[in-house]
Image 1 (cartoon, one colour):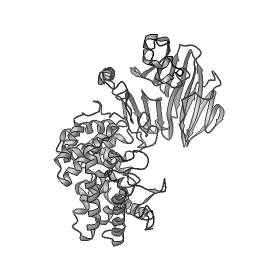
Image 2: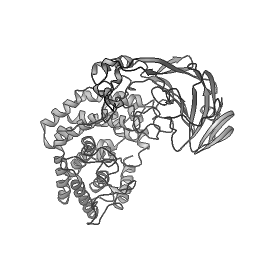
Image 3: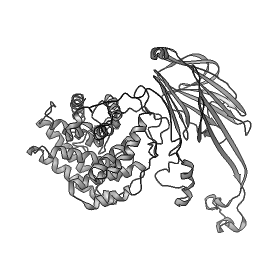
Image 4: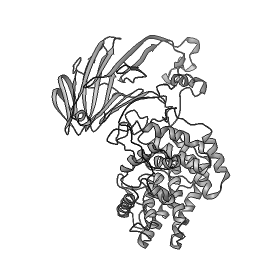
Length: 584
């Protein structure tokens, strides 16, 4: 593992050097060009600090072919000067994609930069002095922003806390500890089953984990590791057989995108040793297989291995990871009780530059049997997803014209062979504002709609649309039974989202263009490699080719089934038997 990382780091060094700007007249002189935008940034992912971590780890590692390479040292010096030059006067950076003059994005850089600085300063190698000077000055200039700056997402609190802990370690700042304690006093936003607020298994759960590990170590707060352990235990059940992380219900930008376990390598590896936990060790080994390079600046695995040499060796014992299980996450979480307390919080349901994440703690069911992996979820556009060998049924979604868009399922209960999910939407109309409540503008020549006290209008003719899905296992796959009764004549649409890599070999499909099809009948078979799934239940209850506000995913294949209320619809999903035979 360590040798593999050293080799991949050397390759990353070479690739990054080819993108460094060496023209002194360029505004990006010394920086490395992000291949996606053609711009040199100071951020922790595609920015120059990430390349600096690759270069620095190679320069000081005797196992690297770039050990004490003078040319690379000169390039690192240019990069450090670029980062310092691009730092704003208030000490922050702007990552490029959004969040200008951003304390949390600055904090991400601090965490990675501080670790690299510590690694370089340990060398006592005189030629590193200019690099170290630029890096220390950059970190010192971030202090005011970290002591006063805020964030706008739940995980930002833990990133900033880790950055403050790093600054305290470097500069001995008691005020940094006090500021971190203010953030930590807000409490941990995690359910007893280990789910963080953002439900972001592909990105931000791993961020919260590693940042709290750093904060626990540097602030001497071992209790901060408890929520990390909860999340790492939960993640054992949130990975498909291929190593793809379950992102089907994320509350962030990883929703529906492919992510692997690599961001979890350090949390698992660190706590596997600290706790002597064989399951964590097994997950670390699985995550390590996904590491194609040491990682971005804030979570560079090789830098951490060089700072903690014991991480270069695998943990002593690894447990076999479960390949057959059925579990419900957050099934006992008293979510509705927490939601009922929102009114007392005083924010009236409004939050700026962020969202309240009221889907926090919504139940999710996970089922795995060998190479078959199923997710059933609530409070998200999709309620069902399946992997079967190479076949990927990425999402099954219900949309309607009642409240145009997808119908999220809010509740889930267990059935003898599966689950019942229910979703309810309400929509009504509002009467006139009482005369005594009208503003002066109502009697003027112009009466803007936005000045009227809409909250005082009386609700009339409220309607309720209730959808119910029974998802049950059979001997050959699954059945989905969907029911909705009232109001009548509501145009509805089921969408089945498949991976683009497979193909349809049967079924009555009307090609709507852009890999979208209306399925009107016949057995629909989708194949990928030697694996397949077959569905029955196609229908054309109406001819609409889309539902307003229900945008289909890009780079996928969508199959639509049109339904009209009242409906009681059954979809059967049959799985190819080859995998079952192999497992037996």
